Amino acid sequence: MELERAKEAIRVKEANAMLHGFYFEDLKEGMRAAYAKTITDADVITFAGISGDTNPIHLNHEFASETMFEGQIAHGMLTASFISTVIGTKLPGPGCIYVSQNLRFKAPVKVGDTVTATCTVTKMIPEKHMIEMETVCSVGGKPVLSGEATIMVPTKAGKT
Image (cartoon, rainbow, N blue to C red; front, top):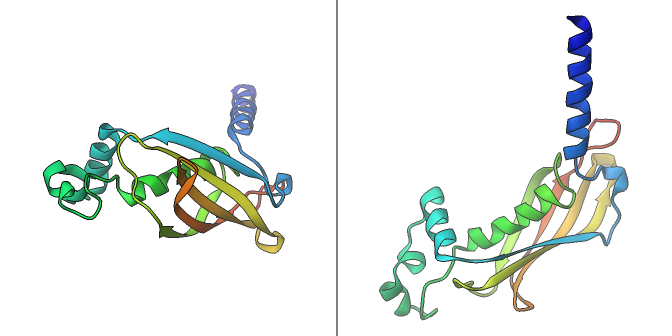
């Protein structure tokens, strides 16, 4: 029984190692990663359901066509969520902790737009095992959202 537990513990540790993203020691200023997604009606409707934000600017074409945007727009936080996708799955990736984020919304995103979220390491904070990142979402090469994030990143020694 003891041998089986030891084998299972090794298997779990090896599986978790394969899932892990970058460690703090692996990162350098200037590293960057991106994620792109084309926004669909289903994305907007699903986000409205999950978030509870049913503002008609997102869901009602007739209402939205009378606004300054002249049509429906995606939720700003739906667009911002793609930053979380980059941070949590690519850079630094699994194992990191999102500590803070500020956002500046610059332009609307509409259904059919392809949003590219790009995150770049701008500062290493070794004493806290944290990094700062520039975060930008763009459509057609033009920024629609920008900001900065602070991320806690695990170390190879296992302490953050």
